[in-house]
Image 1: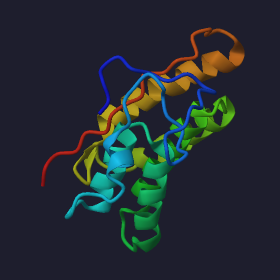
Image 2: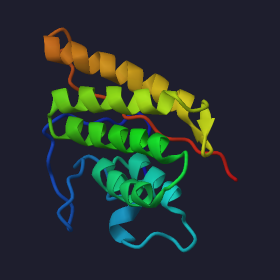
Image 3: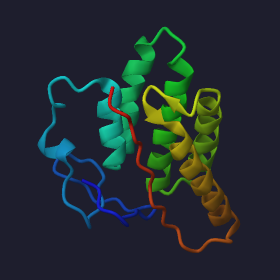
Length: 159
């Protein structure tokens, strides 16, 4: 589980036993010791769990599988969420340009939906994304020496 105040530096690349990049300052998340999601966990909840554990690439993969099957109006919202996952993965790997670009694209897609969509507090997530995108821009311009982000958490209301 994520502890408050924890953050990640770009280019930090230690790996867990299955080869996933992890922050060496924290314990292995439940997704490592529990490779299968708990029974009954829907793909959105699974993606959110991985995102909140800072496994952004894995969250992206789970949500992308859902997005590929989604025929309805949620498709663009999910695409935006997937792009935000990918953006934070890029940041973890030191790709500031990719992170900024995907945060911008993902946020634009999600903004065309209500602030609370699919039970996700999109307004809170997007406010955090906007702050991070601006900090990343400053990092790129050399105006921000502290290359650390406190990653957002996605909050979902129970259905």
